Image: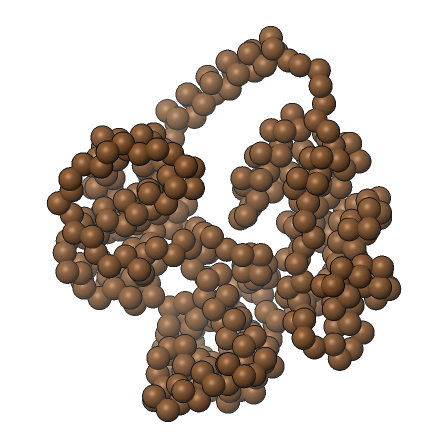
Amino acid sequence: MKDIIKSIEAGDNSQLEMLYQTYKQEFIEWTLKSYTVNEEIAMDAFQEAVIAFYLNIRKGKIQQLDSSVKTYLFAIGKNKLLNKMRKEQKEMLIEREETWTEADLSDFTIDPFEVNERQDYLIRALQQIGEKCRQLLQLFYFDGNSMEAISIKMGFKNENVAKTQKLRCLNTLKDRMKGK
Amino acid sequence: MSLSAGDMDLLDGYLRGELTASQEAQVEEKIHRDLDWQEAYAFHQDLEKAFMYTEGMQMKNFLRTTESGSADRISWLWAACLFLAVIAGALFWVADQPDSETLFQSYYEPYPNIVQPLNRANDTRELAFRYYDTQQYQKALQYFSNSDETVALFYAAQCYLALANTEKAKENFEKLTTRSSPYQVAATWYLGLGYVKTGHHAKAVEQFLKIENEVGYRQKVQQLVKALE
């Protein structure tokens, strides 16, 4: 688990890809046995589970797990699958008894792809403020880096310069949102 | 969002859980009582969500590229299904056209004001948005139609559409579809809707297909294109 976290934090997704490829087929087979869904929906659910897992590692919400990574991925995947089915109002076959522990899934139930109009607009405005500004704001607001860490990563002279640049980037973003 | 630099540092500290208990209580009180703080807090939440979306999409695309082998197989199956569907469609084609106005009304809703908060109206622009929010579109147009600024063009077009002046609306949306801005995708959607309203279904489909993979549009584009074709 620590290796996976370290690799993702370093920007290397190969271990995550390996996890995905290792467990994907088993999850799909289990889903097809337990529910009346097709393979594509099962695969989508498992992909979303891996994505949720990845995003929580990026945000520092996962440092260790009480059970195995597989258990977590399957639990999240099942949750994603049930949400999809609820949305499509499909009837479910009787669930088989499962041995996986239902972990606390509160961190994984938020759908990263469900955005409101304001957020959609913000996503587009972020594409228009330049790569450096976007990277700085992402390091601060998403990755939770300190200004000191950001100044080192981005090559600023010091923390105060990074802070000033962050303020400029936010103002640029604000201007883009106002259509300036 | 007009907090001082010091207040923004405080808000950042709050969102990161870095404050003392009494500082946290102070910030929560400010958020509860002060509109500027509320807006700044909401903006920061939205910013985090925006990054979550973009990072999630990148990972989704990364995982999908690892599926390229099975994707080729699926593509072949889809091509075969599409071929059969085209043949079946040609044999069972019915000559009734979808009702344009009904279709338009099914999918149309005014774009929300995401630029100005409702509670303050200190200058002309803010007043225009207040009129827009309260559906006084003619009054809102008095400001929006006098400016070539992207935001004004977009909301003027919204006003025209709400007032059933579809040709003027389409004119503005057309300009915005070629202007790189955060409104470009929404403008393309509404231009498509404008064509639906005026019965130009092929042109409508042309616009919708440009945005079929954009966030928030995929499902409704698929449904609407299906209804039009």
